[in-house]
Length: 577
Image 1: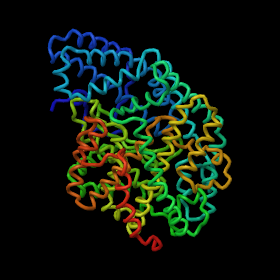
Image 2: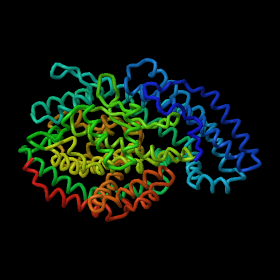
Image 3: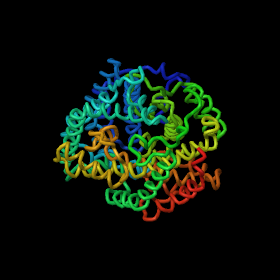
């Protein structure tokens, strides 16, 4: 297949450190897009129209690759002044070419060759473009720039955490290891330091978020929406479900999952011998300590290579590509942005995995999680249509969360004699996560329905919702948390509104894959591989159908999905851990 990617692809053996960054010339990009828009309108043949599309796609992918490369290097070291300024330059200038992009898309939708183009490129591309026209207008450019600036300000603020503990200066991720310590005093101290950071920065965090909410509301009003919610859904590319569907889905979680989660917390309290549990006890699953990988980063990557070689030929090829080109940055270090992500650079046909290892089981789950994303885009990178490289976020998270479970048979490589302990805490964690994910989503719906509320009222609402979804959580008098400030640490709330529910949707679907895999690995893996290869060529519910999974919005799906999980957990003698 001749692809756009082939035209912009360079040396296939380059390592990530050898990828050369060149600042995108947005003025030149805008000129090319305008020229191709004119050519598209005047195209006499389908081939001429297709050429215009490919030319615009090519130059946009080149720019996106450079922006992605700069962002990766910036998140690896947020104190690097060069990439800090480059990301700032992108945030200020990239929105300015959006008007030209939208005009090209409008011309594409109105092309006299549309029928032929739909046959060649797929109807879904046109649906994506139609939605794109609904989320942009030239009058919001300056607002988009401000939104990007505020998002970057939040990221840098969290990366600035430098708390002294046990003779070391630690960031939030590094403190996370001690939040899970077997020693309750250590857990409490480390959790207090994390809370202290957010309490010290409450005014600044409130200010950043308040500005983000208001600028997003302004954007929505300028585009003719009542508030940001509908716009936010369209930004996320949600074509086949809406806020009402999500509200009903959250209702299922409250009715079915919250009672189960509370029973699991009671079981945990009994297991660790602490009642009532405080919030800093929640992360400790066993008095013998949580399961953790029995080696460092290099040790884990060596074993991951063995695991992916054994899982399938496709995963073997993929993981060799990643390791040979050093497409990972996994260690936590001062100045590094928090969290984990996978991204993709079309110029080098390369995914990239970013994480913050801290010596806990999360190191393994984040590695397999992000590898799921990377495996998907690796398998769909030959699409002629760049818009099909990635699916919507809720679909993309199916690949990542399911990969966490498909790798279960190899977890002994990492956890050795603690493997059953890991599986129990991993599966239990999947259930305990669902109420929290739904809580974050309902909170965001409140925020954007009521953009006028004060930061204090916003935090009070969060605390109110917390009691609905996490009724037994006890903050032990920690002021900022009692006042509803726990969500400050959830970057998605600031940077990617309405994204977080996608993790829960994907978790429900990943649990379906977990059940299928235990019954028939060959069929389950075939469905998973087909899903990965489909990339973003279909909307969410069509991809769910393609993978032979059940629609999570339909009443009864969640109850049916978690029943095998409950049976598994009930069959485990967790007191033996």
